[in-house]
Length: 479
Image (cartoon, rainbow, N blue to C red; front, side):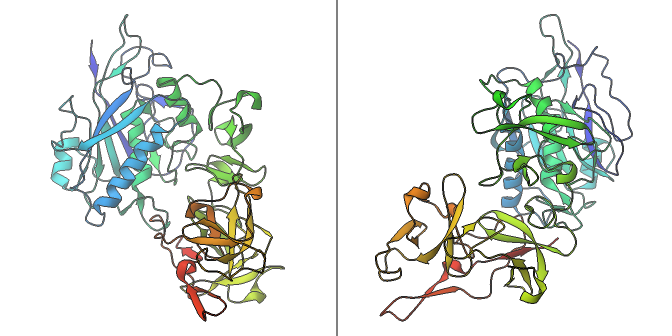
């Protein structure tokens, strides 16, 4: 068997036309040149892949990294990037983190499959041979050519390095949309090479595997997932979220077969409704109410009311957190007169405000329509919310006579909330007050602030009772 060694690099350049999913044996480089490994035809059957079972042990160096990147942030984003491939529906591949990378060997030890930063320019030259300027990361994943007994190329090693030599301003996800390069986007891309996927295009916004960076794609997209399923198929009785379909009857219960258009064409896949929010890697298409890939018209700037957890808001809009992990775009304001009919100017801790329709008692609430002050948005099992008067279950007399204070988790209660509206929430993630009901820190992907004042309730006979659980309120994320 003849081993083949291919270097794959992600460059920070600018856009060109596109193609479909590819492998490391037939991909295209940043200049539009097609790869040829001289191992014969490269297709779905013969593309490079790890052997069966496809459980790849991976080591990560937690210590050497850019000076502005904490060890915790680095390890979190590294594991998240691996998980974005591990969780592709209909694929059997698993990248398993087994501990620290100690040898930092790049392509010279088949037994260790390592991920690490190179922060010294001389070390970069020794390991890569050049390309320090403009190259974000490099992966080497050698494989054996196909044989009569093994019709596909078989990967036997892989190592991945990221360029921390000072050429780029790195951030975990670049969610702040500043002048930076996303570690998650780059690492997820390089991990695609790690498992056999190549560049389908010099530059495209519909694939994490685009040879050139420049689009804020953070997760594998539809064509990337299709390529992974070809290399590492898993048997499923029906199509799961993100899997190709022709009709809804082919999808799992609760999913529908939807269409999405990009510059690559029209894709049909199984998707869940936006009710209750979309999982990581998907955004809500408000035109039909289904969770889709953040590409095409859903990949640009988010409009008013759109989710902005993974993409920026358009001009004159603010990305505001309304509870838990919910982030939506709202118009900025200084007072109520600047807002539309039925909207109020909700204050932000760092000044200014955001125009919101604040739901009243018993009205419906969601990510875009939070409850007004002193109210809790309690969601049922289907993700539908309703505003209730907030209360503390261990303190009597806060609800109207004859109305019970029902526990909704995290030490919080809602006057009159009944199981008939759905299951009783048991964790803070199910509860959204007029601000935020939990006491967790703001998500690390954003620069968040809170409402200037904590919420206060009056309990009869006890004077003023300050409930600080509403202290972390509407948060603004920098573009």
